[in-house]
Amino acid sequence: YRKSLAISIHTYGENHPNLAVSYNNMANVYSDKEDLYNALEYYRKSLTIQLHNMGENHPELATFYDNIANVYNEKGELDQALEYHHKSLTIKLNSLGENHPNVAESLHNMGVLYIEKSQFDKAEDALNKSVRIKLKLVSENHVITAMSYASLGQVYAIQGHIDRAYKCHHKVIAIYLENLPEDHPLLSDCYRNLGVTHLKKQELDEALSFHEKSLSSCG
Figure 1 (spheres, rainbow, N blue to C red):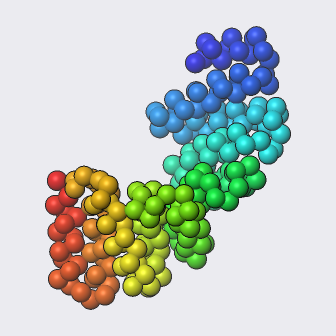
Figure 2: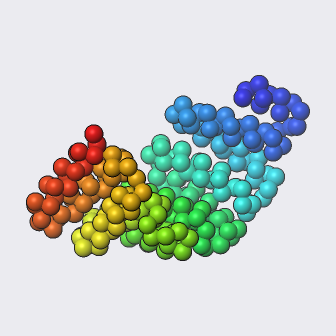
Figure 3: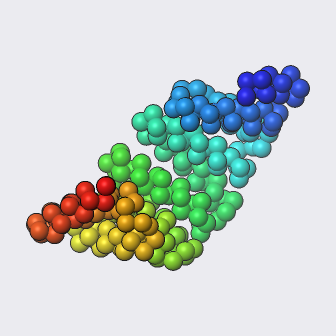
């Protein structure tokens, strides 16, 4: 990639789209190597070129913003991650409309970050919006819908809305059992969430049963 980068700079100059592609490819490699400092540096260089050539509202920029947001998330810099996910979401809404899977994905990602920041009302709002979009695009029994229900269940449990949390986690279990193998890690997480929910309801036998299922599905 470094050789390709040097050739691109020499051939096209510093603001050519091909150079942005090379920077982005290098950033992907650094990200895979968990070298987050260099990944962020090269994603930013790629974004700068794309902004120069495309302007601020081009649909393709959403992917670059998401890449940067994901690196900030890995670095634990949640405010910056949310900032870039929000930039991505704005572009997706303008270019794709409200009822698009990419919009639902951004809202889900932001909801999860809000959970990590303990901003549970914002998390609930983002995740509910994500679920509503997904229900318009796929069946209620689709795995991508279950993922948002699972996060929403966590929010409800933290907020003390135990019955809502219970309902969400049972939906998730039903969807996962229909679509995933019995030893899938997502099932273990969901059994554990249900165990916690039953514990909060003081239903101790049920709590123990689901925690045992969680351990069993871990192998």
